[in-house]
Amino acid sequence: MSKTLNPFTQKQSLLAISLISLSLASPTLLAETLCTQQETVEFNCSTGKKLISVCASKDLSTDKGYLQYRFGPKGAKEIQVPDAKNHPNPLVKSGTLSVTDGDGAYLRFLKGDFRYVVYTAKGKTLGKKSGVAVEEGDKLIANIKCKGPAQTTIGQKLFEKAGLPTDDKVFQLP
Image (cartoon, rainbow, N blue to C red; front, side, top):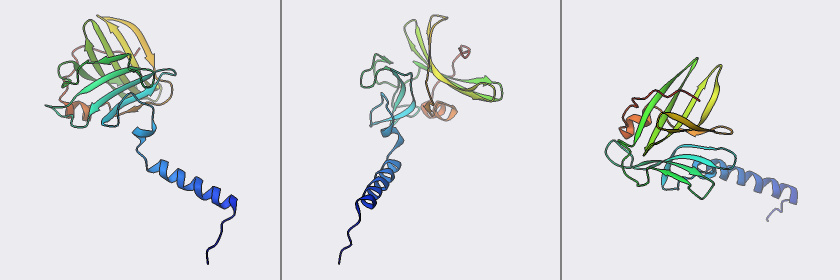
């Protein structure tokens, strides 16, 4: 003998199943990003209308794979650095930040006279800061901040995994 659930109980059951399914899904798949499902999201955030993403090949190591900075609205890359999916060394430099009561890290992507510095930092007095600083030569020409939290793995572990050289320039949070 089968038991029929009342409509209210059926709706609760469907909602519970949906929530469980969403919680088991990869967070990368749920977030809006410019990375593909075949890539690892190393950094991602929204600026409101556009996305800032750093995407890596799943096989990224000291001698293979790629790391790319991407910027643009969902589904459309306006900027991609480097253009080709080649190993990031020497087109990407890495660095750490000294922050009062905290820490931070960044990746500096090089393209001609332009530098795209994807950064993340946190500290007691600073709070959390993430975004991309755009430099032309030695001059800061734009600072685009993340609105809301950033998804990030930028730090020493990533730097070592990819064999990234240490940045010889000092980066100051804008």
